[in-house]
Length: 352
Image (cartoon, rainbow, N blue to C red; front, side, top):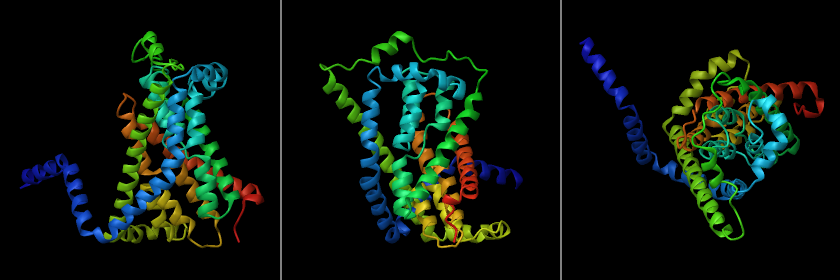
């Protein structure tokens, strides 16, 4: 009897992914009435928000990577990047573009660096830990102005987000610091032939490839947005999220945090935009709690972003571990910095 139980457990473990995918397919049929509007909403979010904000940046970074700009930037900023983050100066390109454009541009550039032999494996993994961030347009525009109705809240979240990612970068300067720093994929000569080769004669070809690569990445992101909109809808319709709320209610009561935040936190851990939207609509006098939780979610990024990054890193030999640990730390740091700023500077305190 005992051996039979072990056999069945082993069988379930071996086929766990197949069972999950089967459950997902079944849920799509069972909850189609609530699922179809969620999918349409996800598609609308992707078409109206993701594509306009990310696609131009993807093309721009692809074009810049085919010029001498990254090398020039590396020479100027090597004195800052090396002692601070233990990454060569070229890493500043991933850091700056990741901050300006938002998820998942920083991770894509870090993986491009690895594929094109600009940084070592260890350096690219350090870059993964802190260069993939929410952009200022999303934090101030979407979260601050659209969701909270206050640009100052957006500014507060942006400051804490920036401080948190720098803090994570400094901590992760020690990631595999004892490893060899010469783990390049190919030779320097093979890399130089691929890079810095854009001229007026081949501009059309380079632009075409940049657009093609960018479309591919944007379509993958769109797929993740739609799938996770569907998953959240299924969890809602099936009552799983409401049961999770009941399960975690005693913990939140013990911590003196309003239980109405549980749904938003779980949704945000799955998909950042839906979660923050839910949290921003909760009306309580101490709005600082809303802001601190939002700050954590912005730093962490959610499972949807994690899988987007995994789809990019899977094309390289980079580990996803530094990214996951880095984002978890960034969420904690961002929440802490937001708490400190709200309590130290009355200008940022919006409690009634």
